[in-house]
Length: 271
Image 1 (cartoon, rainbow, N blue to C red):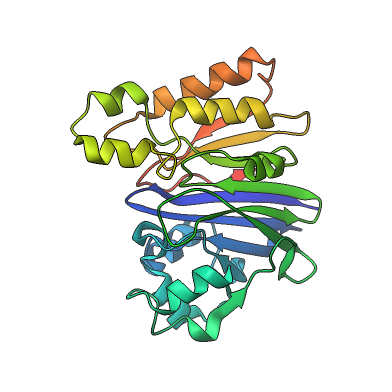
Image 2: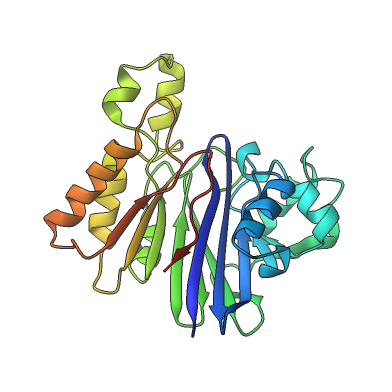
């Protein structure tokens, strides 16, 4: 099967974009980009630093229509003309969004409801699940690269049953660990914003993330990546500590736990 690769270009309210690919015989045989919240120029630069190009991914998946996830999607569509996969509901919103409306029509691809959609023929398929978040619609993805499964769940007010069910089958899970409850309560945000963040349609706290990881942990789980940390209401150390303690408490010291950086690119991970 070769190596499965993951790279985050940015993960947080400043922008979100991830590369997932398969390396075989020293080259990328298939890849997909998840979200487009950073510039095409930056993605090209960071891929080049790894010896890769935009030919390393053949399609894109979009989780929702908030700006930090689609800010540069129009540019990707205009200059690369790669298929953009999303739900029918989300594509309707993207067709009328300022950042995407002029460019996305020719790239539009609709995901199947409740079933797998082939993203890269013979190599990558994906199935979506809906998560609670205050966008038009927000989804997470279960992505299969041959026999390897990656689940990404970002911008989720709660880790609901459908998400946990998918994560319980995954080799690698990328999950939001957005805020620390104490820091949010004692930080600079007004009450209306604090309530929006934790009302079940905002973001996943460190504690709820750790609880979810405990619940979906299974013998085949190899990696957990924590994403979309708040700049003002969290720290990488606190997010890591919370989930690491949860994993250790259930005897899963073997699971690699990584906090993805907010504004900087991550290294290229071999999963």
